[in-house]
Amino acid sequence: MVTPLKRILSAALALLVAAACILMLFWRIPRRVPAGTVLCRWESGEREEPYAAALASFAGIEDGAILLERGGTRGTVGTGEAFARVHAILETGGLLELLTLNTYGLAPIERAALYLAHRDTLYYTRGAFRFDGNKVSPTDMVAAKRVVLLDGSLPSRYLRDTGAAQLVLRTGAEITAADLAGSAVESVAAEPPYAAEGEAVYLDTAGGRRFVAALPKAVHLTVSDCAFADEGALSAARGLISLELPFVGNSKEPFTGFDGSLSWLFSAGGGAAVPPSLTSLKVRGGTVDAFAFRGSEIRELDLCGIPAENISPQAFLEMPALKYLHTRCTDALPEEFSRRTAPCGCTVYERA
Image 1 (cartoon, rainbow, N blue to C red):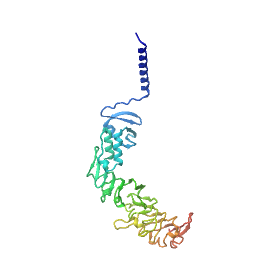
Image 2 (tube, rainbow, N blue to C red):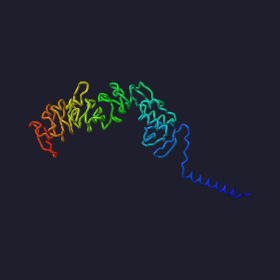
Image 3 (cartoon, one colour):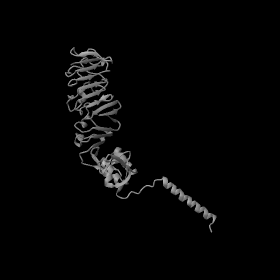
Image 4 (cartoon, helix red, strand yellow):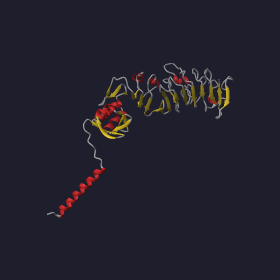
């Protein structure tokens, strides 16, 4: 005999089963990935692949995912919390965080991806350190694609000897143009108080922003507005062809110890040679001293916007290669130069 209670329980059970069936239509049940395989999400769809095949397609790490690329098709492998934690420390952590790095909980593909992404990185602070897939520890490795300067300064010629193409400056780093000389560094990433803009590195100080260094491969360089420039800031850039500066010399405003010469920016190890490749120069402001461009092969000089009273009458002496000058000075060059008035009101001098 079926009691009312049994009928109610049977109906309730039937409803639960029906609800479960409906939910299964809309909920995607996570698939269990067999051991030795990786679930890859390709542009064409998901599929399980052998671990070795997925690893062979490794293309980097982006937005917390492992990137894959094969035959022009991109894909990703999902990652977990342990991966995000370890990756963040390897990218932004200090020495203590790096040395105490805990890689527990990483899946094999995650561990391998982190190693591949950081195997060519050297962390430096009074010695070099490297991630081996399990931990960060001291290393004698010399070659690297990236150097992360955690704190302090680098040994002489360190960047040149490593062959690194990228330099990362952390807050406690100390860098000079001499460190970049002869190196293969093509890009710089920096934390405050440093700043990297284009192919130039700056340091923000209480007195204002300093221009610290130009990268070695700079050819056409524009230096952003700043208050000061370190001696030899351009010394590593020996292939410069054109240059734009906020001022000439070591400061925008003259002060005791002011040096208003272009050679100040190229001075290194007692030498002050402006590279002969530099033939075009624009200066946006500051004071232009007498003989400011002595020793250069500049053919085109643009001083538009600098008041005539801020330019010495002897500023253009000893410039044998000069063929074009744009300035507010109305009597700057000898008669061998033709003269015309530019739309801005400046005088343009030209020599055939």
